[in-house]
Length: 419
Image (tube, rainbow, N blue to C red; front, side):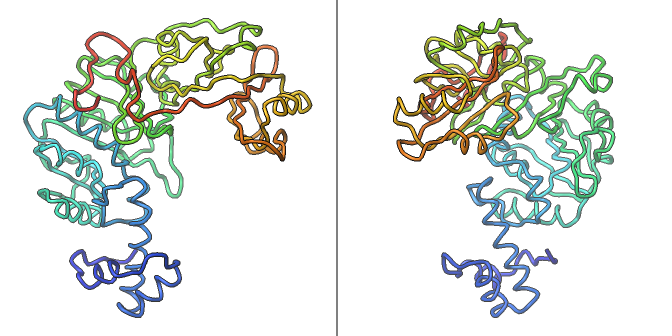
């Protein structure tokens, strides 16, 4: 995107007056005719980015965008949940969002009343972050500064190191900017800090970075069933937290957290796995944070097999991060036997969910679906004695799920406003 004049009233008016339902070519043509070639091109790209942004920022407050900045921005729901943590734990002092990008996290922090300073080394991102903050009615104190050289001594720090190397994301903390080692040194100068990490981050692979006396805690966060990030909490922001935790966000109100040391649950034997009445599919944050066994115990369920995340049990129990399925019947993963199971229940087309099978869900659905009958759901699982198919009915999930809250160590209490 070219340089956008953030106070271009004519451009904003042209965007606001676009009829609903125009395709991309018609939008570009209309804007070019009204604004000229260059401003029209900028306006068309901004219109596209704003439409994309609404999926992650439904409030529409993130209005001044770049393509790369939008890809890196924290989803609104996730940013709000983290900001609530700062509001509860960061008592007094200045919060520095040292890698603010377009300002997604800064908007959430400002909404809590934090004494906020935002910074980014990219002048264009800093300019847009300031415009986004001002547009939402907040003070726009945004400074162009490299996170390695903070513009002030803050009490609290938020860092989101850039993991892109060219067109690709790197999983090596030594290739991030700032590096994770540098982020940790910056955090040591503050009362508390939060460092955003990729969702696939494995602390055990980088144990040398996390050795030492500093208080620290890892939290993996999912949003509507997708694992979106990990956060390393440090200093006072890590106080009274379990070493590892999962946070499950869904819709606008569900906020479920589980934390504590890894537990052990024995898997079902093959015969028992064949006969389960209910199956639970865990949220990916539970798996990544090592909390699957803890939740399984709380729910009275056990894995269908070793190293398999599907849980089986006699009845659904309210527990964080579990989606339940009532088992109608099961069969070995053989086309003839699965088709017979579907016929017995008048099921034709299928939605397939699977764990432990190399083929895609789409390929499995194409292989086993029948033409006639109602739509059904098939879970495919790798058991100790081979793959098995379960015909299931999903248990509807309400947004205000019963039992939502925390399973974990004493002292790990969520902010009241999040429940």
